Image 1: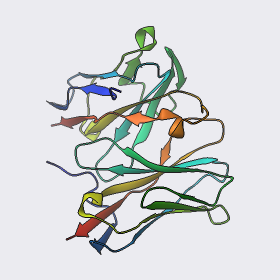
Image 2: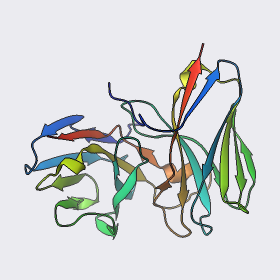
Image 3: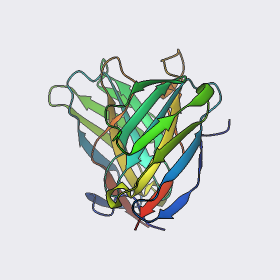
Length: 119
Length: 112
């Protein structure tokens, strides 16, 4: 089974520039998540999609961050304009969205992330 | 490459020892807990989970213990190997939600 695909793997931009990350979840996973992981900390949820609808974006800085999941499959996360404190690894994860018999962990799977450095 | 968790608490053990990593969780209503392993440059990888109606669950070389009274989780790794070196995170899911709330990680260093 293919995993969660993310691109690019690394990105370096100057502050005030814009950047976009892409995620392709595991086929059949209804729920998609974007997490921000600052160095030395655990991942923090930014936004959760169920199919193409937003379930939770309470921790998304909406003045500069936006995300979409067109057609309920791939997703993009955008930052415009970037700040120095946005330097982090951006992780995408997907899950079945519900507990199924015999499926551990909701099938929750993380991608390898995009490491963003803002200079 | 740059590592995850340069300033995290660190547990150093010798190969073959048993390791115990502890975690305090925050929400008494959480009903599902997961331990993740994260190696440098990779996303978190599932190790083992436990539901709130259990206090112990065993996997291959790993055991998770849950103490709901004091909101504490622990991960026990038997016969620790150099390949176990990584940062370990616990995560909880608040009742009715699927999002994960991660705790502070612990870096495990295994010496040959």
